[in-house]
Length: 119
Figure 1 (cartoon, rainbow, N blue to C red):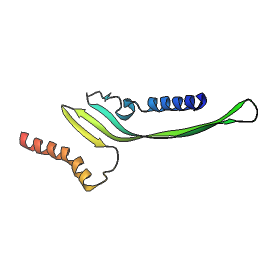
Figure 2 (figure 1 turned 45 degrees about the horizontal axis):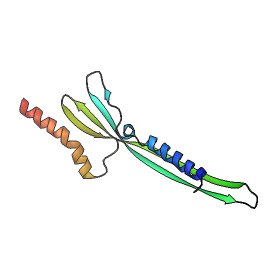
Figure 3 (figure 1 turned 135 degrees about the horizontal axis):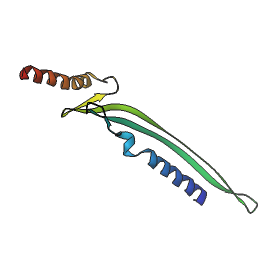
Figure 4 (figure 1 turned 90 degrees about the vertical axis):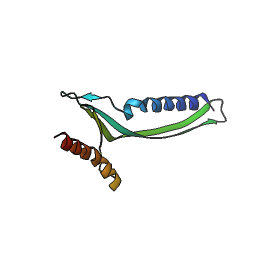
């Protein structure tokens, strides 16, 4: 493999590595004035492709052809909400199944039951 192809692939891998750091998946915490901490959670999807070739012509110079392409998509998935010692996971999208909806409702039900017994 020529040094041109090697350099091209090495640069592409470095770029991908910088895109997939943990702060892209688990975001920086945001603290509200009342002390609630919100932590965004995202899904990162990457696509990458590339290729290259060296051609030796009849003359003494060599020719190189190559190309690379890639893309990234960051999709918010949920938010961790930490408030008054309680931690909740709030989905950023609609529940995908009835079980997901029940799981989303459980913290509210527990809060209501605790409120009933503390009265």
